[in-house]
Image (tube, rainbow, N blue to C red; front, side, top):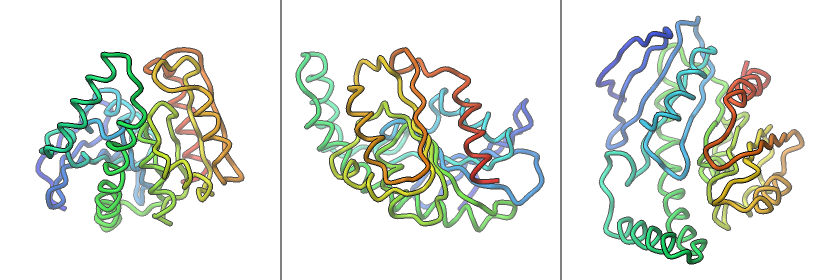
Length: 241
């Protein structure tokens, strides 16, 4: 892991950009005493780590006493996209503009994205836990629920996870949800225009966790109340501190 920049932000959080091979990432750490628990934070279906909403969440969580890390998936952020990625995104845009069904397009696009992202997140986790001051436990927090499900099944070091029910979850990850047994917090926007409510409720039911909590709020896809970020940190506090 090679750090390429750093800056101390006005909330006292240290923000450091890094690379791990071809993987670009960001690490936010507070001024709290080490060792710090670690939160892996992603955005919906691989949106860039520099997205303002995700950066705000990361900074808030770090200020609460966590090391927070995010990376750009292949084909996302500044990483080059393959010709197949470009075709899938173009077809998705066309279908959405035409009001056509998009589930099968999402299925063909998101499934491979998840499979390619998981090894990179696990390699990043290995490198982060070798840094001085980061000792775990490890949590996952993010809108990319499909990735979180896959990581929760594949990565035994993840002790708790907070998901947002607003992203498309491929069939493979919906089946894998039954194997997820760690404590979970699932956020649902009741009026999410792009994600059927019943699908989110069915996903919550499918999780195999004995401790799982569903928070549902009125509003559309981007209307999650700010207080859910505070509640999410309290959830992490219970399981990672």
